[in-house]
Picture 1 (spheres, rainbow, N blue to C red):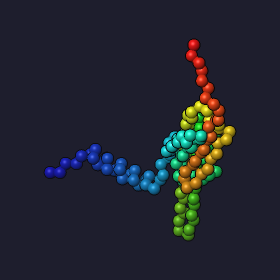
Picture 2 (spheres, rainbow, N blue to C red):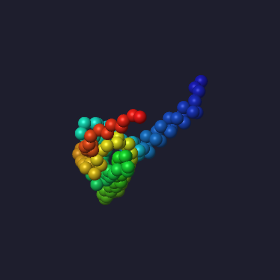
Picture 3 (tube, rainbow, N blue to C red):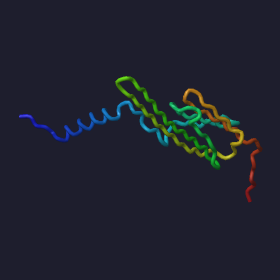
Picture 4 (spheres, one colour):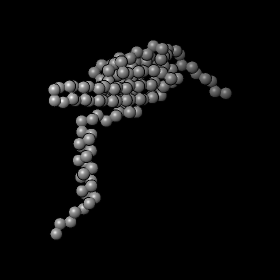
Length: 135
């Protein structure tokens, strides 16, 4: 006598449905991307992985003592042939807010984007250390 577990059958059906519906779709990358903050003495270097984005889809800004990286991509492709129409849509969004240390010069910051990696260089402000005497 065979026994059928209805929950096992339901689980398999849901797995097949998810594979059928979502296979080939890129997941939405929101609020997350790998970021490295490197202190190089006279400057800070920030490296952020942003694969799949175009240069004009990326925005870098400063708010107070924070660095903000935003990227959003919306792409649609359509191919029409005699017997079919193929449409593909790809959406991706990234947002990171990174608190930076005191004593940096955001006015002199420079950014570049190459091969899916955003690089931001922020020089530190030059000046002597201020020593506060104790009472």
